[in-house]
Length: 88
Image (tube, rainbow, N blue to C red; front, side, top):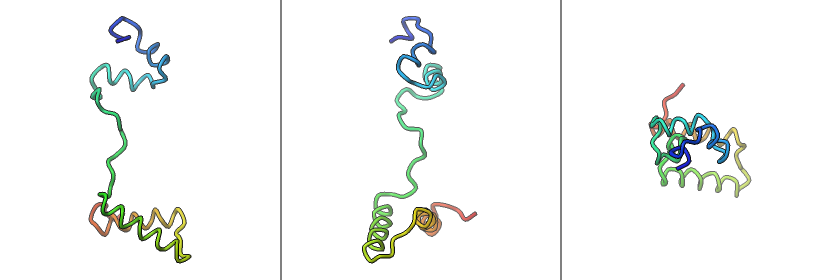
């Protein structure tokens, strides 16, 4: 709307707090206008994530909670076991 009215992309980006390059990419069609998330998709499906979370909660309940790094390592090992992630 604003860009069609002739306002510079930089001004519109600043007005709405959007990174200039992000707005430029959308205006130029490099990124689909309907794209709202740029993060990678989740590694685990809902069931896999639920099983992992239940295990972590159970371990915490019996006094064997994992540190942040141990949780990351556990998730990584689980992904390797499932064939989602390669070793190395």
